[in-house]
Amino acid sequence: MKLRYFAWVRERVGLAEEEIDPPAGIATVAELVAWLARRGDGYAYAFENPRVIRAAIDKSHVRADARIKGAGEIAFFPPMTGG
Amino acid sequence: MTATIRLQKEAFDIGAEVTALARGRADIGAVVTFTGICRADESGGTISALTLEHYPDMAEAEIARHVEEARARWPLLGVTVIHRFGRIAPGEVIVLVVTASSHREAAFAAAEFLMDYLKTRAPFWKQVEKAAGNEWVEAKTADDSAAARWSAAKPRRGEVN
Image 1 (cartoon, rainbow over the protein chains, first blue to last red):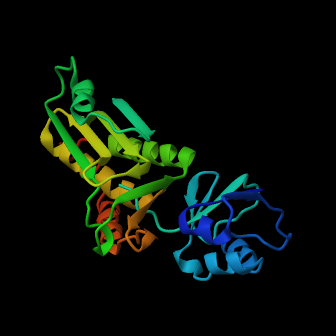
Image 2 (image 1 turned 60 degrees about the vertical axis):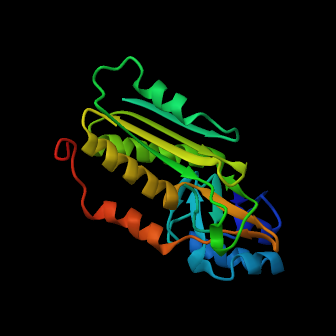
């Protein structure tokens, strides 16, 4: 699946997007965040406080307990500050 | 209902957008506009500009979902939402929401509803340029509260007119 990062999540991870293939046991957004946080220092910094991370699956907002099975694109970003 | 949603880097003419929405329409009795402008004193200091990052396809889809929800709640005759991205200097327009209806109540309410949701649900992120360096604007809990009040009471179309 494709992951996309925005704003300071993108800066901390050091990538705007990447293709990943998470292990079979990773079922939810929260589990994916925990797995990503262990991939390196940048990821650990980006995901150090999972409660502030917002996520979208295929361009719709989802909660941390959303299941990732079948997702084409998952995005992670901070709380939004548009308008 | 006429709905126009645009995300763009370029500045635009507010008057032209309002005129375009209501032109040739004898059924529109009220047009409300909200214009969001870049302030020089954002984030507790003087800024030289802000840069808006966005998630292109999702931003359009998310705004369209909320325009549709506004249309279901109020008897709207037209909506225009234009949100800029990229670098924006103080004094420049960031966002424009225009709502049109037969009467003012629906137009005012829908404009406020759309802005509250744009602030908290549309995937845009502001970064400010200050003398000390760039920093990301933090989300305000007041904006979350403003958006949350719309979920408490959900008037059906026809009840608020």
